[in-house]
Every structure is written in structure tokens, then in C-alpha cells.
Image 1 (cartoon, rainbow, N blue to C red):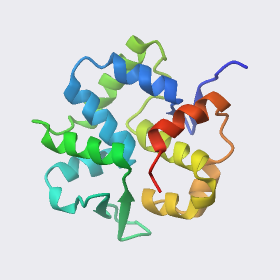
Image 2: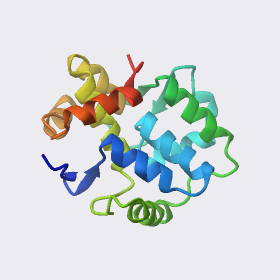
Image 3: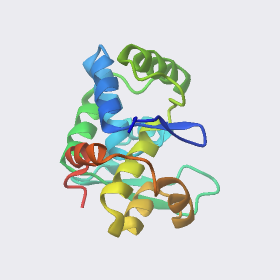
Image 4: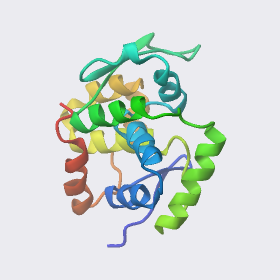
Length: 183
């Protein structure tokens, strides 16, 4: 079966092999660290930018993320981190510069995706966040409530977007490498 691109509402969800290819196409280590931090936290782009100057909200295996949206259903949430997430956040916080503007990051992502040979269709600043939630929902279906609360979503949104995605058996085996230890 051909591995088709996965799009939800026009936003690309990456397969683990696509993420690896994208990661390897990024020339600067600092930008790879930023991509990892965006993936392994599942933070919104603006949240991770905010976190750079609010390091005290990082705990050992969680991030306390106060809501930054006026209509948020949750005033704060705890973002769970596995070992890779903890490492990614530490590297991101040690980096010399914060994330660039969302427009610049999007341009970079699309350029890197093309360089990686995965195509830029649907690539956006939301790609890492949606990819992470999809991977967690795929790997931990019995812990769905913890996943959507950690991501700051409602159950309805999570059910609608992150279940029944066309990941292959090989995708799931590779996801395990990234998601292991999240619970």
C-alpha cells in the first residue's frame, strides 16, 4: 500500500519517516532542536515562543502552560514530556535565539520539506503539534483523555481529528521510538 500524505483540515500530519527526513534536511542543529521541541511538547507555536522567556514553567517531566487564548476552555494545562521531550525542551531553552516569526518558520519548514523530498503540501506551523497528538492517540488509545487534556483540546476535537488515521504498521513501529515513555 502506498503511503499517502495525511492531511486534516489542510494541515499535514507527518509519518515518522517523513519527520526523520525533514529533521535531517535542516542544516542548523539549533533549528533541528526547535523542530524537536515543537514536536515533543505538542505546544502551539506561540506557546513555545512564550516559554523561551518563561523557563520557570518547565518542571522535570511537565510544562505548566497557562492559557494564552481568550476563549480557552482550560485556564492552564500540564504538558507531559517523555525523555525525548525533556531533552528537546532543555536544548531549546539553551539555544541562543528564540523561534523566528511564524511566517519565517513556515517558509523554512516548506523549504526543508522540499529539500527532504517529502513535499510541502499542508506543511504549516501546526504540523508538529497535530502530528504529536495523532501519534500519541495512535500509540496510547486507552489514554485518550490524558492526551487531549495535555494538548489543551476537548474530547470532541480530538476524536474528530486524531482517530482512524491511515498510519501503517511500520509507521506505528517507528512512532514507538518517539512516543515511548510518554505515560
